[in-house]
Length: 199
Image 1 (tube, rainbow, N blue to C red):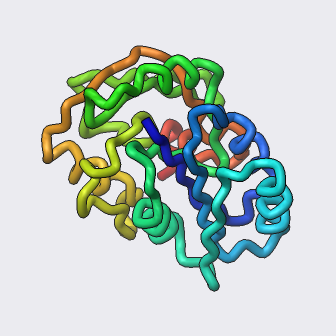
Image 2 (cartoon, rainbow, N blue to C red; image 1 turned 90 degrees about the vertical axis):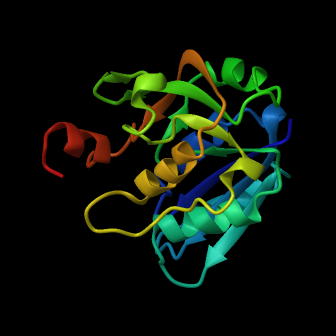
């Protein structure tokens, strides 16, 4: 199976290398990064990394347009059989190798579990497909259809993307593996703000 890894990047110079290095290159058909008008040296880092990683493709927004817009650009540009979504300030844990090895084309969605930098563990199962949408899954590209990230003030754009996918009743495999660190390096981690009830 060909897997497209996608991510937006905005002022991500502090952590983007850790994210890129966590992607197992033997499973990466392509790595699409949408550089979203950064004012730091994110683009220079990406261009340097591309010299040793031929799978890396850089999309460039002329101005900062936000994560949802950038995710959607990546989804539309992806050409793999499956799409794996990762944020530029997150990274995969070693178990992602075991998750990727299970992608055999039988299911629309392959789920894995997530850990926050505070050590909170979030497990995906059939009871919570609509909650904690986040980046817990690898999705068949043809199944995505017209599902897209949205821009809202009341909730993150991936909630609408996830709802559109779940409403189509995908066939799913729950690997049970903890394979994703969420906002690991950010001091203002969105996961921490949610957990503290500040957002």
